[in-house]
Image (cartoon, rainbow, N blue to C red):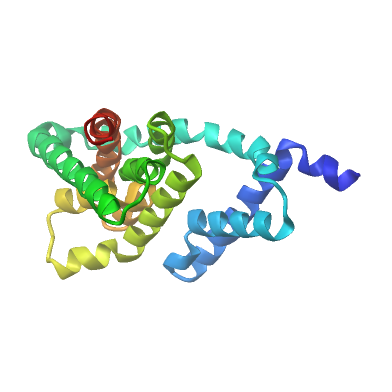
Length: 233
C-alpha cells in the first residue's frame, strides 16, 4: 500500500529523474567527460529501463516528471546570461550569425524531412523528428502542435545532443575550424545544451555563441517546421 502511495506522488517522478542524473554527474566528472556518462543520457536510459522492467505506467512517472519539465523554459532562458556577456561580439557579427544559423537550420530541417520520407516513416514519426533541431523546451510543444510524439522527440533531441557532445570538438579539429565564433555556433546549433557544455570547454566566446545558437535555432524551428508540415503533408 505504501509503495503504491509513493508511486502516486510527484516525488516518484522527480527522484527517478534526479537521482540517476546526480550519480551520472559524479561519474561524468570522474571519467573526464566520458560521453556515455552524460547526465541527461544516463537519466533518460535509466528512467526508461526502470519503467519498462518494473511495469510502472509512464503516467505515474509523469506526475513528477511534468514538474521537472516546467523548468525547461526558465533553464533555456538562462542562456541569455553568457549571451549578454558577449553582446559586443553579437553586435559586430550579427548578420553572419543570424544568416549562418538561419540557412543552416532550414537546410537541416529539409534534410531531416526528406531522409525520413525516404525511409518511409509515417506522419507522426516525421513530425516527431523535425523539431529535434531545437532544444527540448522548444521542440516538445512544436512536436505536439504538428501531431508528433513528444516522447520520441525528447529521445531524438537528447541522443542528438549526446552524439555532438561526444564528437563535436573532435570534428572541429578534424576540419580545422579554429574561429571561436564558428566553433561556438556549430556546437550550439547541433548539440543544444550539451553543445553549450562542449563549447564552454573551449572558451567564453564559444560558450556565448553556442547560447546564441540555441535561441536562434529555436526561433527558426518554431517558424519553419509548421510551414514544412503544411507544404509537404
